[in-house]
Image 1 (tube, rainbow, N blue to C red):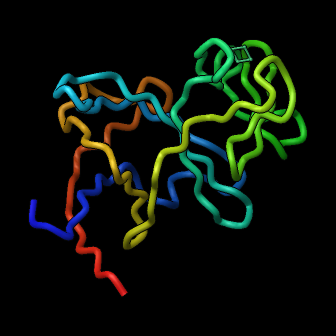
Image 2: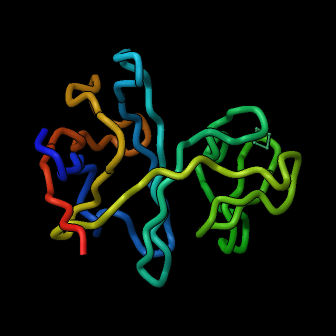
Length: 152
Ligand code: FES
């Protein structure tokens, strides 16, 4: 890859996540040792059209946040909530504000919207990730592209 470029991976159309909802993706990535590892993430779209991505692993015991009922949100939908022991997290920061891992953070995933597509950056995904996402049934994490980063 030429210097000054960042590889990004298209995950889905930005509009495929409804405002005020979240969607899980079961991806595979290549780690620093070159090993292929499962990479479960979720992306939240706020009512104000902000997008926030996190690794789908609770800092308490590593559970998927949507464990159980399949939702990522507390009842009032103003916070994220882990389905296992109900830790609550700020949507915009991933900070746990209540529950057994209070003060810890969800691991953020860098995402960017390019031409209406939600893209991941900073990770190398494996394009053949073994089929559709188990939560959404969507199998669209198979496109890659590169963008140039121009320093100001
Ligand atoms: S695993 Fe999430 S609160 Fe315990």
